[in-house]
Amino acid sequence: MRSQTKLEQEVGVRLQAGDIEGAAARVLELCGAGVRGYLRVALNGDRRVRDAYSIFSEAVWQGLRRYRSERRVVVWAYRLAYAAAKQQRTDGRPKRSTLRRKGSSSGARVLSRTRAATIEPLGAAEDAELMRAELSLEEQTLLTLRIDRGFSWQEIGWVLGRGSAAEPMRRRYQRLVQRLHGAAIARGFIQPEPLPSKLDSLLLSGRSVTRDG
Image (cartoon, rainbow, N blue to C red; front, side):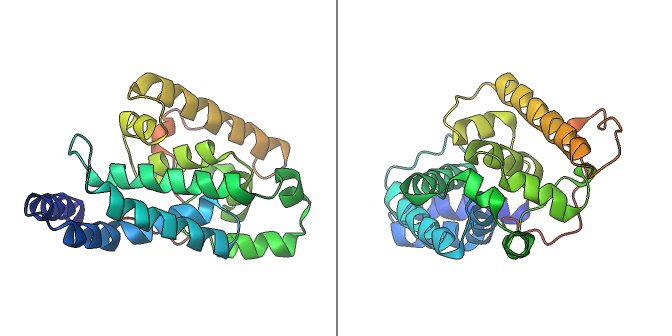
């Protein structure tokens, strides 16, 4: 959190001085690793991740010329990252049914590149991440921003272009986690037990986590 605060301060100082290049470099330095982790979860294939990150980086450089500080810099950055991921999925995303027909060895390779955390109550990390890979981009982003990045509901809604009302995002998150929980039981990944009463406090697995700052 200290690095996040430092990022906000340093970007603001550089923008006030007209140093767009310096501000962009700080955003990419402190948000880059987290954004790459998010893109690895959101997209299938290293090339697509690289292309999306390139789009994101360019958007940071261009967007800082019009940046306003109503939102945290990191939230603003993830809105650009979400747009870049959306563009990559639209431009050439394989059909979801094709992805599901791939063999387990292919799925293992995809999972080995995953850097975001997963939901422990849904079963083994590989099983939970495999289910996450079948979600829509918006659903993937909702989970990543809430569980892995700790964004507020208002911030998530803004990143997704759904407005800043907290309650719709919270309800959608609850429905999504409940749906994943039911799917994990149906697939035999976990025993038929209730979810934790407080869905916001779901444990994270011990897999490698790439965060911002």
